[in-house]
Image (tube, rainbow, N blue to C red; front, side, top):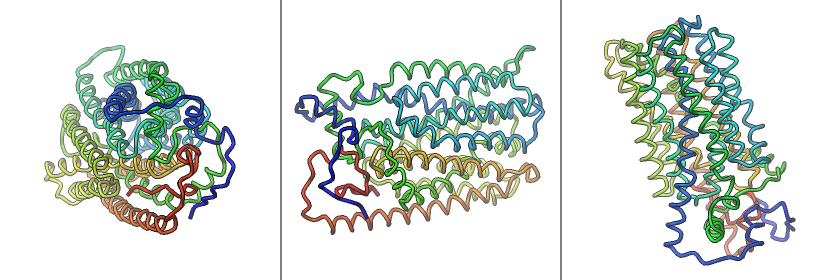
Length: 488
């Protein structure tokens, strides 16, 4: 399956930046106590900023969901189908920008590129407060999608630069719970701003203005304080060496600024790429539907706008608990697929409750709505699965782009299942949630067996093969590196 030519000559610039750094520096011995202290220092240095970025990207893109029940429909003179288009164009532009942003992310300092995009989408959110018609809203949503496209792939890449494979799921889970926090803060902000009255601004305009300005400030902080990689970080000399050395076992390298067409093509030809793409698309049909229409769904059960805002809060709490529990377990047992399935099953049940319970069983339908939030909680496990199973920097960047394009595709399809003619129950959309979640479950189980079979094949083929010095940092892909084993 792979090309394991040990005699291939590696030129300077082709290898990982970590190896170039190690070759120019003296190495030191790291004790277990040193490593524990180092990981804690890394956590405090990068995790709060990563959490803030993901929290704001989720909150900012879903503010329009809260604005919908705060008077946006009336003030901007839009209907349900036009609102669906606002969700659609965000993910279309997000999808279109994934490949370009992946290339730029490899060429430019990762954290600086991320910070610049945070600032730019903060400006877009702020501008929403002056949008009073469908045309202006759709223009801002397009730009918002372009700039937010950088967030998830950048955070996945940064996580793999700093953490071992078993450490990655809980760390990705930590920054990903920004989504659940975004639901809670967004609901509370919506509830609070609905009590605001003014002739100058409506409540939804103030919501966009305040959140946009906060996002701009965070973007500036990210540019100045989030390190681009371990080699250029604020760590001491010894800590930088230890950070690099402890990642040898990952077999995925840290960073290489040279775009390698061969690795990009390998990614596009890899069957694992498209299995993961299909899973991501299937699970994001319901995720996109819920994230865009949750407030509308809850209000459709017969609640007022203020009650709807408060009843959205448990969704965030469920997402947070699900993410923390699943990602911790994935790291503890070094398993991804099993816990992805464990989250998708209750999501499918929740979709069934919303679709098939009688119209007067609004409490049961509300519980079903809450259960569907488990589907979105499986995304950090997908991110960590890709982070662990793709090696070669260009291949990783390409795969991140494919994964996020699939994320967009699912989120494009999801809101489109909600049609104005199906209001207020939207039964066809709720059935789509059930069906696509079941498809994602079946594909996840299939991919796990594919990885397991490939690992056994490699074990048989490479018995007795000698280890190549510094092979971990030669920027080899998972197919080129005979020592690489896929995480299940």
